[in-house]
Amino acid sequence: MRSMRELGHDCVLVAASEQEGLHREVRDGITVYTAKLKNLYLPKHNKRQPVSKKLLWHAIDSFNPFMQGALKRVVEAEKPDVASVHCLNGWSALAMRTLSRASIPIVQVLHGYEYICVKSTMFSRGSNCVSQCLSCRIFRLPHPRLSRCADAVVGVSRFTLERHLDSGYFRGVAIQRVIHNARDPWKLGVNGALAPRLQTKPLRIGYIGRIDPSKGIDMLLHAFDEAALGDVELWIAGSGQSGYESSLRSRWASERIRFLGRTAPRDFYPNVDITVVPSLWEEPLGMVVAEGMAFGKPVIGARRGGISEMIVDGESGFLFDPESPVELIGAMRRLVNDAGMRARMGARALTSAIPYMDPEGWASKYATVYAEVARKHGPPVSPRDGEIL
Image: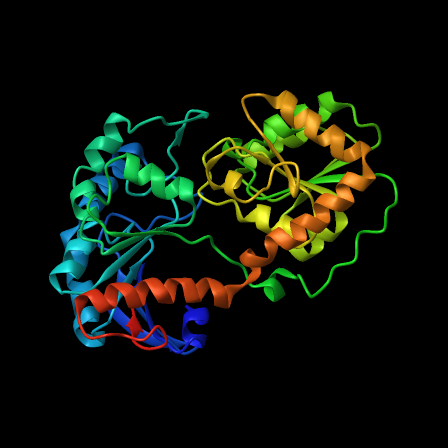
């Protein structure tokens, strides 16, 4: 929204919160509304709830009429030209009908699989879901119909968009786009041209991200062990469920494996030579791929979700099938044993990262979509004019 504001737009953010009532404030020139979430609880990371309570929460969230009053009040007060919908959890998909009945053009941005799956991951019991399970079909009964309220649908990857279309969502929605996400290179710590890491022994292979079984950490550790790479080190940065993380640390205690805990990208990437993104689940768009490339690191990535769209196999890195860990072992060996290949791939990775490090260009693509849907609903709206909700 800051990037949209820099392009000349007025932006209004609407979010659910624990605070009673509907509140308005201005932050960094952006109007922010927060509304009390009218459900059993406000979801919080790592805070567990009883199964019965979670089921009832999802039942309400499937079609929540109690949140629509606050949304209507914001729409009446702000009269936006376009509604850019990113996450409906808490508001429920009923918000699509509320916006549509107010004659507000809607752009739905798909960052995950919330429309299809109550967990938004389509990943359960260690494997990817081929189709909806019974509970997801029940809790997502209204969603296919309500998805058609959108005037445009944007996937953060081709994979994510096609997964929804193939599942019967957004039928009849004429405007369909793929817009990959972007990061602010200065906040990331990429400041101009990067000097290569001074090549001293040992080489370092790096993983950064959430420590979770779905991220393929176990597979990476096994592959690193089997690859027998000599004095090469594996650096793992990030945190997760304490029990799982503790188990990994105890099972893989080694001088060549370092668990760093939460680490800023600017402190991590300059100190590794190769990065690995071994996700088992179909990540909509693994931005750690873009981060690694922006620091000039060859990236070995799993053929999962949007990751395959980010790496040019054999040029900016390697892709491997998580069902075949031997491919990961082979890719690590090739890059460890060939300094020239690491340098060539690192240089190509830097070039490949450029679109992912361009927030203004990223925002401009959305502005074009917003202007297109706004024109269909009324008088022409300039890409540098109008209010976005």
